[in-house]
View 1 (tube, rainbow, N blue to C red):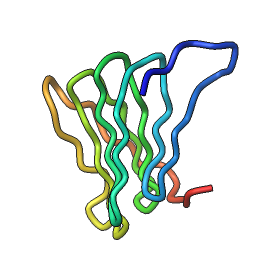
View 2 (tube, rainbow, N blue to C red):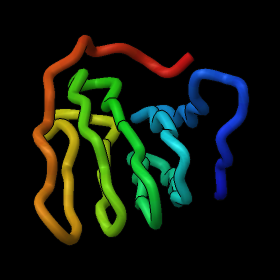
View 3 (tube, rainbow, N blue to C red):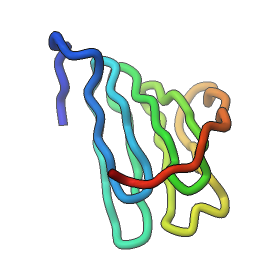
Length: 94
């Protein structure tokens, strides 16, 4: 998926397990039966795990995964230094 900057404040992709807020980037969202993952190719994506309430900023070469159980929170992986995982408010998909 490619997203270009528009007049809107942001572009957001929601799955049953996490949300990805696009900040001018190219990324892949994969949704499985019990989990969802976001992989960033270019730009930045902020992800939020619904069950855990955790939030993280992903850079190129990085990914985040959230499961339906949410017990482990956001699972980050990838190249470079992974950013901090901040605690937000748990929620649910809209």
